[in-house]
Amino acid sequence: MRLPTGETLRGDCAGPRDWAVVYVHGFGSHRAGEKAASLATECARRGIAFAAFDFRGHGETGGLMRALTASRLLEDLSAIRRFLAERGYTRLGLVGSSMGGFASAWFAVRHPEAILGCVLIAPAFRFLHRRWEELTPEERDEWARTGVRRVRNEWVDVEIGYGLVEERAAFDPAELARRWRTPLLILHGLADEVVPVTDTLAFVEAAACPDVELRLYKAGDHRLTPFKDEIATEACRFLGGLPVKTSSPDRSRHG
Image (cartoon, rainbow, N blue to C red; front, side, top):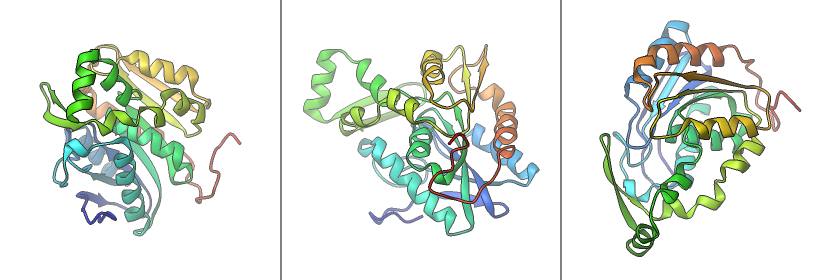
């Protein structure tokens, strides 16, 4: 999938035309993770088209992680949408994990005509804000001065650029909830220590749309790997039960 910048997104797509489930991976992850594999298997079993790709700076797609911004995530999703539309997939069901949930949610708000529904797994609604709020004033000053901050944990060891948090005002979680109109299923673990479940509960409480389902896993951590098959089943159940309509400027089921 070629971008206007000349870069290429790497991904896979297979299945019958019309609509497709698209897996949107998280920070430091890739399109071939365990949840994605389970979802691909379940989609194939049900005869649903499935697509997955690597964001720039991730997996097999080139690009620098330090150039990551929320705007760049949405640019990548726009390229995926165009690529799939050219191949007959006119409506998409997004299944986004963590940062992928953040990106999927904002894409759905800005392009509702293209989205059938969303399934968000431990969605990082406050992805930009938490990156900033967890720092001391000294750490913030250093990041602003150097332009780069290292993120190191059990999953990743990367450098991210200051441009990521400079977009905080443009991606306000409260605005996202106010503008929400898309059928939505959220899956979140109560033992998540990376993205607090309170962020999800706050979004659900504020969301300006009654078509929102929430499922909580008592023993679920951030990755929810032990529940990957159940998550795949729930995602296909939810998205497969939504009416596939012809694209139009306003596809909201609630006016």
